[in-house]
Image (cartoon, rainbow, N blue to C red; front, top):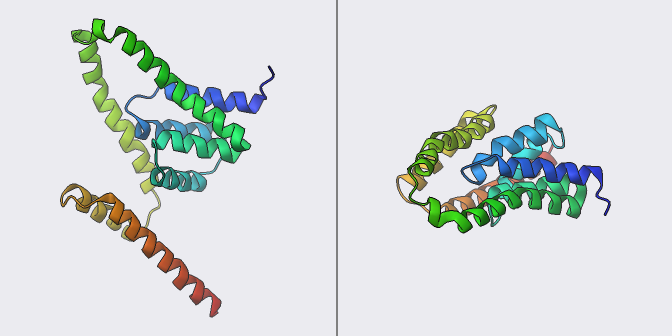
Length: 184
């Protein structure tokens, strides 16, 4: 069976990302960013940020959603299938193997120590893309992000209502800016 070179490249790139990232979807973002923007130049940084916003807003894991959007943007539906399979297969294989051998390793002190040692690296992998996204943001956007974080973490506000409110504000701003531009 012939598989086009680009589809194979999409699959292997996302398979590698899925294989070597620990800590869930947010920990995969800097790896995805490095591969698709810097290394392969499949998309630019602005499109990547837009994809992250969309991936976070849609149901499902952010890494898988981002993979779908990158695959679709580069090669349509077959590209989305290739990147999705590449992203989820490593986790599926690892979970399958863990399930087969879990009873033998669940109380192993070395396995426990390895997982505890990985935690700081996972936190760093989550914080790293945030730092990249913050670059170039205007002060009021940073203040808004900080305010939303406080509302969610400290006051227990539901992120759903905050996202819905942001959508309403964004639409209102677009309408206002559209009218202002039409008056010129």
